[in-house]
Image (cartoon, rainbow, N blue to C red; front, side, top):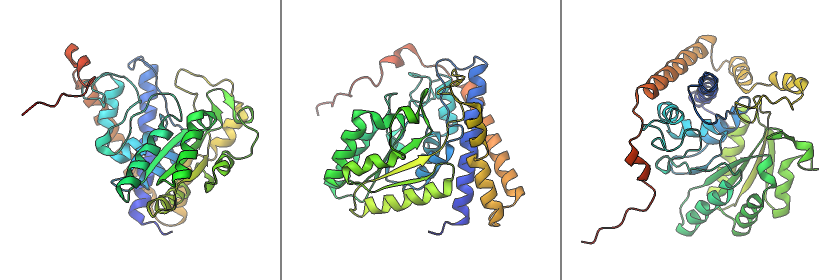
Length: 325
């Protein structure tokens, strides 16, 4: 599969934007400027950027909290997300929630709570609707390796396989379910083997290679879009920060982190672009400046935005009644 130069540069841009944006969120959290929790995808950004960029405009994503790349790619701006973390009225939830548990169906992104893999059945429901309507649209749902041990994971996989639904399941295998290492979660070598129980095609890819993830997702989307049913894609990567920014992750061996640091997805992409003469260092520096400016503008927007009014707390809780004509 050939990928256009502009798309490769966009993949790099979203990798950088995701990393730098979440680095700033982490810094603000440790400064006490952000209340509540802060979760980042440091080291695993290629997963969300790869599968998110491969989607088409009318497709639906059911991401989880380490999928910042999907939010940004689908059009939920850095300004709105930063305001979300500040609890401001201009945030995605209008100030009702202060972290990354967000979604905006206007951009094809389903919101989610913390219970991992609960978005699998929801994404499956969207795929069922597409099939019933005869629409050539696909859904994608992502969870971590820990989420694949939950019942809703297996229920969604089974239902999607039986009904041959247009959905692709992504697993961000970042080696730890909070503090539980993979070896204490399952005895199989690859999480992708779990798809065998449902006779579902599966693939294991390098979770630090955004190009490989993009290609695998694009191919799976086309299979689903053309009636071939679901695919499960395991992306093997490593979470370089703790479960959240308050977690020092002392349970992770330092030598393991050092090993994965050499496989950084951004360094991988930079090497790929340079070695294939797709981009020069000046191009990358230009993208870095663009990202820096975007994040500065997002923070200024969030700082200047108003907090919600007390009455805003009651808005959006119930369906708006249909007025009789």
